[in-house]
Image (tube, rainbow, N blue to C red; front, side):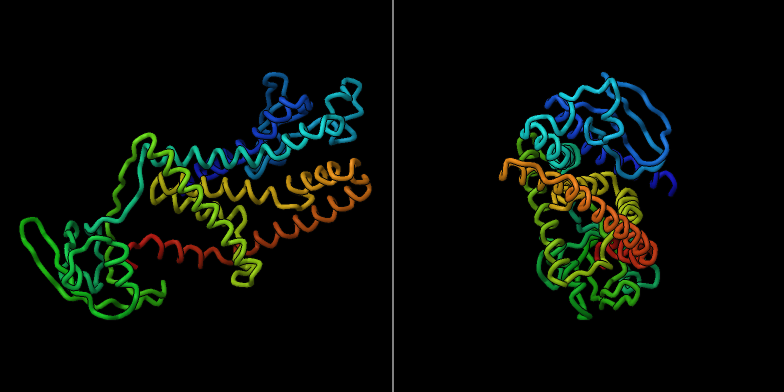
Length: 359
């Protein structure tokens, strides 16, 4: 368990690292001074200067930042500072590119991860071969065994396992007639699903094996863009549900909940874990573009104002907005932390439900 959490934290740190690299590379391209590149928050554990940029790893493996010249008044007054490298003194296009580059890198990273999944692992699909049978379940009582291959359901040849078998079982208590092959023998049985009160779903009490079908290079590129598009749609749908009232703030997850879900995905296979990291990277990229002052999108909003009206947002207004939303953001973080802890058990049950293929 400890190793799963460690690997999960490293994976999430990789997502943050990619985001901050976007800011770093764009800042260097735009002639903006970089005072520090940090992964993690809190006290510094280790640091080094790489190509003139002070880099550090910090104690808390959450978040990270790129400290730009000119954005911290105390550091900007250093006698070694060059005003020409200050963020606020660089052309608007350079500043805009530096702010948006973090999110763009997250999206590119997600595409790359999806490509790697398609090319090296392929797409997971549920097979018709039984992987395990729970003791005292309807499947167990009917005599089904590990290795049996289901060939027909209710008299029809089984083609789409998800649609023609798993969904059918979950739909209600009606008995399911199955024909299956055990080595050279063809057997059949009629089984009635039971309602599992723990998971609130109809089940037979068996788990089916998963298989992976790999893709060729160009098919992997096409598949990566398709998976990327589906993930973006999922993010947009989740966001719409939150504002339409179909989802509530209680459904939000913070770092603890993300680690819990990601650790579960790691247990179920490296491919599932990487797919979740890609989704997290997409989510981080788009969340950061929201027009909220404490996020990258807030800085972009200030830059857009400057582009439209040929003047910067007054410093007092900018600072007032930043301070207000910083406090709100901290309050939200405490809320989601509390929410993650309170809902830990329920989320664990839900993850177990998702892991059982015919649940």
